[in-house]
Image (cartoon, rainbow, N blue to C red; front, side, top):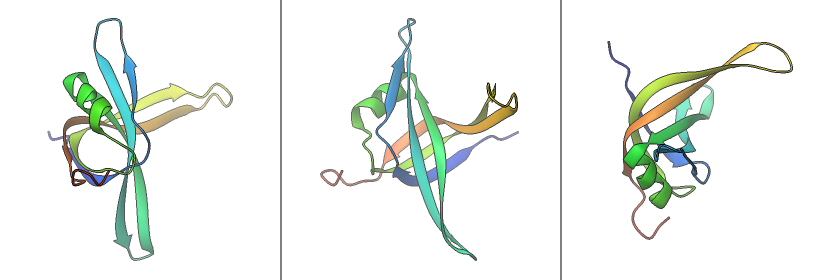
Amino acid sequence: MVNKVILVGNVGNEPETTSFNSGSSVTKFSLATSYKSKDGDRTEWHNISCWGKLSDLAKEHIKKGAKMYIEGSLTYDTWEDKESGKNMKKALVNALSIQFLTPKGEE
């Protein structure tokens, strides 16, 4: 089985980091990917999570608007909506590696 996601896009928001009592942390941000379809230009938004040392790297260096290459795996966050009682589901990309594509000084 293979669960691999490769994305190239632009960071949509300033990353947010959550630190845990164990000393680990997670940094989350959104990534916009754009492409042309038969209906015109489209943009898709992806939720990215970076854990451990990658979280520290993301927290220090990723800025809104930066162009990024992300490799990771796809997971889903599920919960029950308190108002409607419906089960909800959101796709997440757990980043395994990141590369900065924005040239230095152009952030």
